[in-house]
Image (cartoon, rainbow, N blue to C red; front, side, top):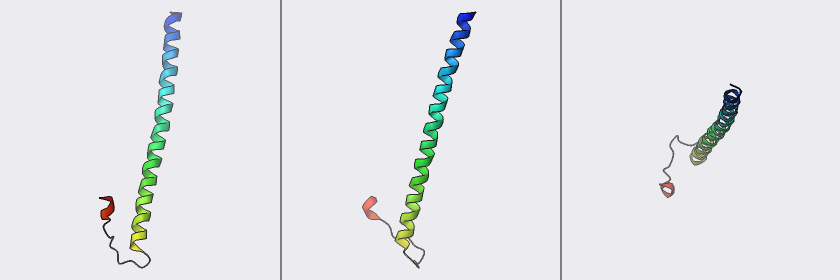
Length: 63
């Protein structure tokens, strides 16, 4: 019985560790996606320039 309890505790520790790592990776992934979105928005605004006409010129260099 004591052996089963020890195994369950070790398993719980492993699961907790994996859960923490996944949560951390998820936060990093969301941050990277958010940064990419902000960068794309900034590039679009820069291409419009001040008082732009509301259209974005295609960037054929990144196609």
